Length: 114
Image (cartoon, rainbow, N blue to C red; front, top):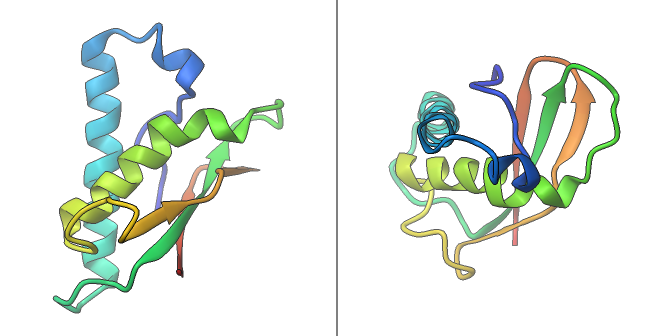
């Protein structure tokens, strides 16, 4: 899917205005839910899975992947729950791997069965 908004780390999260933070979270959640519903035509829950995201970035600057777990990855998982992929984001249903980065303007969400 195209990047819904800027990806931000937990370090950047501390300095964001609450409205800007809320807008980013909403954009990521809603985009994830939209593209999930667009590609998945089933009404059944997915099997429990491990989520990993591959985020497009402008530069090849060094980034700490684990700093994006509590921000972007959390919003993506919440979007999948919002779309009906799972009934909840508890460890019974979903786990995660650290984010991966590539130069570009899109994001790929991969769910691997547990």
